[in-house]
Length: 270
Image (cartoon, rainbow, N blue to C red; front, side, top):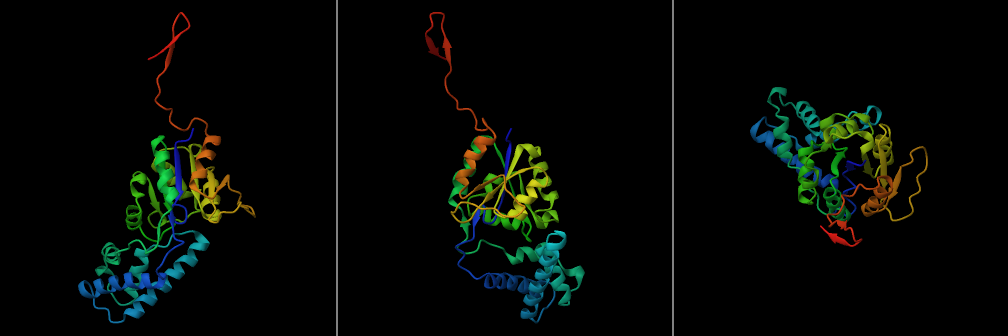
């Protein structure tokens, strides 16, 4: 029985292909807000470029370390370390306030895939629970701003997990297990959909979950190596017939009139 579908976020539900703003410009603008907040209300900082460079260096180090042990980078921890290195006393640093000063917002040109806005309501209308896991260095409340702006947040009311909150990145099994627990479903009752063969497909399959690869280019998907998805799609619309084949009857039965057979062999709806 199918009870839940869990999705990756970026490049599965959210389309970054038309981003119109340079990432470093975007990052600098938001780090400037943290710098200004700390200088104004916490402790004077006198070298903004040094702060930006320190944050970026710590971020690169955190992601390189994550490749070895799958411990998730955390923007909050990175900001704390950077501020301490800049001379801010540790007991004065309020990480939550720094993250709110950062003011993460959707990036220009990034938007929901149209098929996500069309397919998610179909799943929900048929009683399927919907979850989300994202390999993000930001806590989920920051990524929620994007989901809300793109019209996706309401579909994920019960289960949205950021690796920064969980402590581990996909493909670590713990984050997939946490999503199943969050939704209250068994592994055989859920399917995972993502665009990254290693993080999404291998990760979900490592705990016994079926996994479907979203292929970015509209070409017949050719998967090489040892990671073989259970299914591959170019559009989320192609997810529905796969679910029909795997879980016959998963769609809610339509509410139609029944027919009672009378003794004379005629029928009368009731």
